[in-house]
Length: 261
Image (cartoon, rainbow, N blue to C red; front, side, top):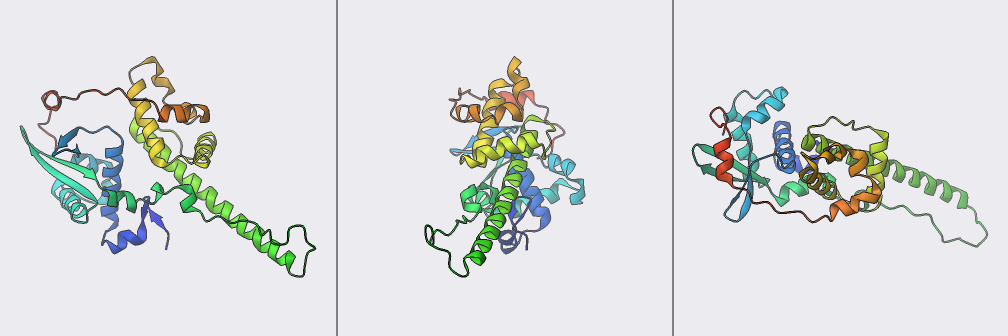
């Protein structure tokens, strides 16, 4: 059985009684929350995000789900499984707010560090400096094969990891950068080798989006700049300027008359 599907651990998902439709909706909610494109609200000391069921219906017509009520039933199932938290807000209408949980992050396999995803294979050094004995050649062949398998697995992981980063970038910035761009794969792969995690990439994307959007620097919201090795750590540790958000004004300005809850 393949380890992951849509980035989630397939074996764990099956044990939780989740169907493919559940995972598609869960991935959509996860990506929306992490895109920083949603209305956010603090409720009982915790952050929640307004999820519109219509967005999910329009984004995934192949789900063959016809109504918002059906989407809400699937979301309730994900809440019951402990993957999402939920709050209902009644202010000039009824609105559903969600957030992801630690259990969801554990279900998402690409949150693991590269050194946890790949087993290290090292050359045997037992006979270093000694004369080769019978069987040494066979041992070397096995070691080389193991190294080759390890490198193939490592490269595949880095490619999958890079695709996750590019998908997140495209979702956050509404861009269409190619997942298989050699330049992007190389830049992201080099940063992965340095030990940076998926959350680090998302943090950089979110910080620079907030910092550069609507400015002359907006044109630099691209992989070649954001993932440049000489810049990345500086972007990651950049101190954000906190901005107060007045949610009442957000509701007044938004036309909610034809939005699903």
